[in-house]
Length: 186
Ligand code: IMP
Image (cartoon, rainbow, N blue to C red; front, top):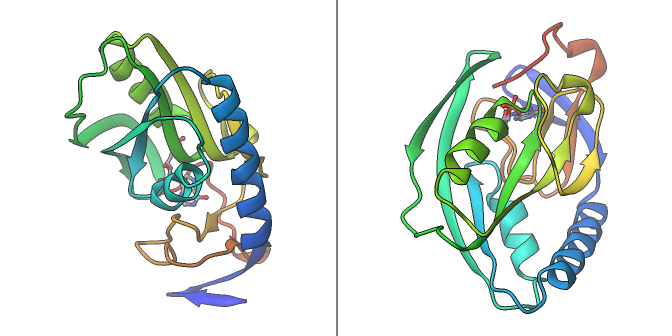
């Protein structure tokens, strides 16, 4: 059990299980992209740990870069995605794989995919560590999913509560009685 500001969280998925799953995803991606040199585009801030864990187990030539977007206003997704740090690399003709920490409403991913598709990559796929199917508000295709989880608030392994908790190596979930009655989170 841990305390972040006013909220209590309990262990949800252990670091060991997260690492094992990430290794499996890395093997799949290395197999699927054999003979290619994919460009990983990790979404800051939340995906930094996922990206680091995954890239250590990618066995084919690859590149990584980072973009930063913000789509949340208070507790609800605004649906408007603002690019705070854009892509510097030329994605034209590249095999792009977006790395995201969590897909919740899907609005952020939908917008990122739209922006990336406009750069004419050879291919465009998504790997997300976590996916909340019950929270999804728009159709997005997710090619690699670490864990499908219930519509609950999670922190750790890169994910935060009000800026805190990103450093935790396990994934934690907000204790049930504290889950507010909203669909999306910031
Ligand atoms: P979406 O646009 O609703 O899919 O939101 C995606 C973003 O919301 C993620 O990249 C996270 O930054 C944030 N988010 C969604 N759910 C959670 C959660 O349970 N914990 C922490 N951040 C979350």
